[in-house]
Image 1 (cartoon, one colour):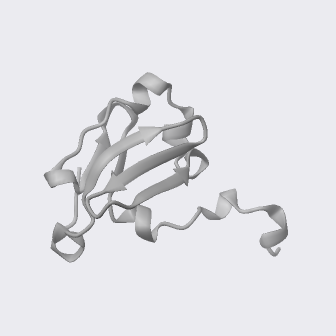
Image 2 (cartoon, one colour; image 1 turned 30 degrees about the vertical axis):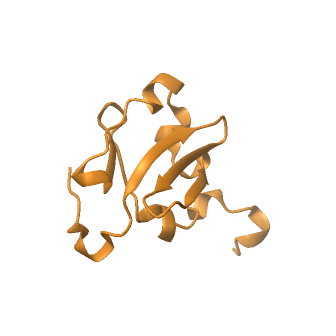
Length: 95
């Protein structure tokens, strides 16, 4: 696993991660809670609840890997991530 140098985003540290049926939530060290649709993370969406809950917080909360699912997220990504192109509604995609 590769985690970029956290110095540029060291203010973005994950304190807690949890899920509901539709979203992944992260609580950051500044108190913000961010929820993103599981559809944006297909490996997490296809995983069982037990698999989703088998993650680690590494590098002081900077990284969130799921070894079993081969998924790696970072705290800062939840603040800068936009939905993948393939999840956009058809009317927003020009052909």
